[in-house]
Image (cartoon, rainbow, N blue to C red; front, side):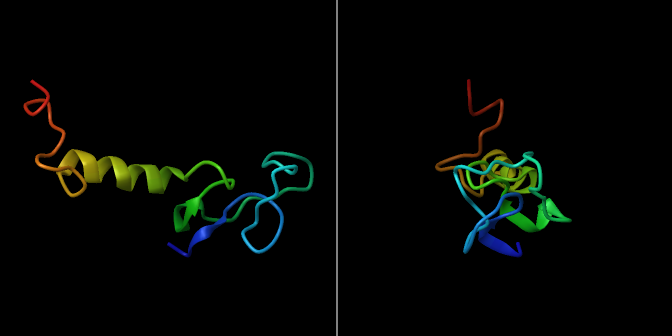
Length: 74
């Protein structure tokens, strides 16, 4: 990731976040490649970040004691 704290879409320094200026408002631009950011808008994560977390839970990397598989949920 390019930045763990800086939002891909927003306005304001140092983290490109201002709670009064939302992504999608006139004049607010998103980064060129959201997959290089953890944070989308200062509140939500990017698809890439959510994907890495989900894969970690499903594969077992972030699951203890066992991965979240259909077999482990029975």
